Length: 82
Ligand SMILES: [Zn+2]
Image (spheres, rainbow, N blue to C red):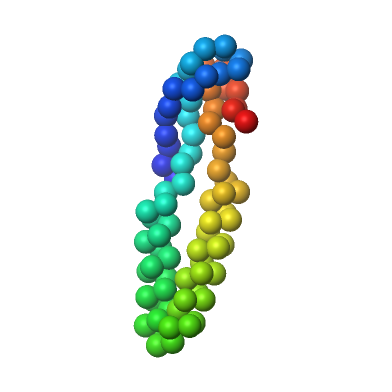
């Protein structure tokens, strides 16, 4: 998962500090969804099944990504933003 650095205000340090966070790769997610749909379509030749497979994959991965998404953390004191 890609990491993003940004300057944000920290409650603990009471000043803008460098924060680190994991960001969801939407492009990669979309590519996997399309790949999954075309793969399912080639295997079954059924567009409905392919669509359902793509949607299922999309939903599962999306939930996982959201679940693993952590708030940005201060690199100075380590406090996480809400
Ligand atoms: Zn801090």
